[in-house]
Length: 262
Ligand code: T3D
Image (cartoon, rainbow, N blue to C red; front, top):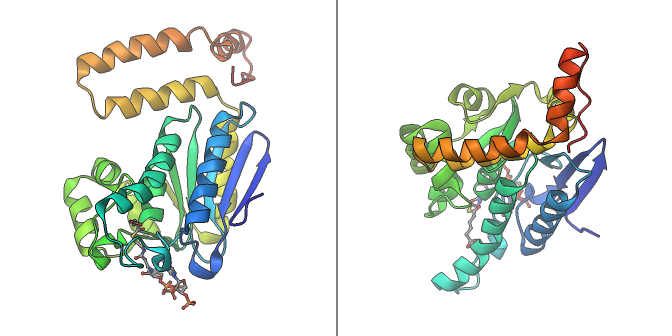
């Protein structure tokens, strides 16, 4: 049983809600451990074909709980920090590697590492009241949780440096203009808008989505020759899936395909 998360699964969609609203869902050690567990479970479960990550209460998340900060007890050894960070890194890697789509549904504040966890999801849907803050420089730190990797790739190096150094808030509409989020909707419509996208994905060709993730994320770090080689390998796998065969049958039968995620 989770103390700081609410998880719910229906129609192949797992919704994981961070639930420490009194501190804007700041990460204490327990919530981080629970999120690692919940995300790993969702990654393994073949019945789950899409994962939504969101926050309870007033916002998505306020980053590391400052009362449990590595330096709060005076221990500032680099090893201590890396031990702590390692658990965030595990989360980021699981989100990126899981062979199914992930969506961050963001309302209110997404600060510090909470902001960067949204960047590690495949899609971001934001409410117009969203506030993305690279809060790290405000407390003399560098963006962690994959911020140095995802942020410049999403918004370009100039904007990434501005967000990281000035640490100003970026609103939902501005985040949409920057390409930081896929879509910005009125706050009252966020839940429905997220669900609509999640449902499309959850009833889509899940195996292909997993391979698409691999192709795109590996493509970020490779040259054209390597990417073309990888695409050949992955297409070889996609073409043998039951969902691909079903799509071809459906095309000739002039009907919508019924994907099983197999
Ligand atoms: O080794 C390592 O761990 C390195 C890892 C680093 C990862 C990081 O994430 S570093 C960045 C950590 N986060 C921050 O620095 C953000 C701190 N919070 C804020 O700047 C503001 O709270 C916000 C801009 C996020 C939101 O402002 P606002 O005015 O909407 O809300 P608020 O009133 O400041 O916060 C509401 C409550 O949540 C408040 O408690 P209270 O006064 O009602 O009892 C506030 O203290 C609490 N809270 C907010 N953020 C955190 C927090 N408590 C603990 N940790 C927080 N991060």
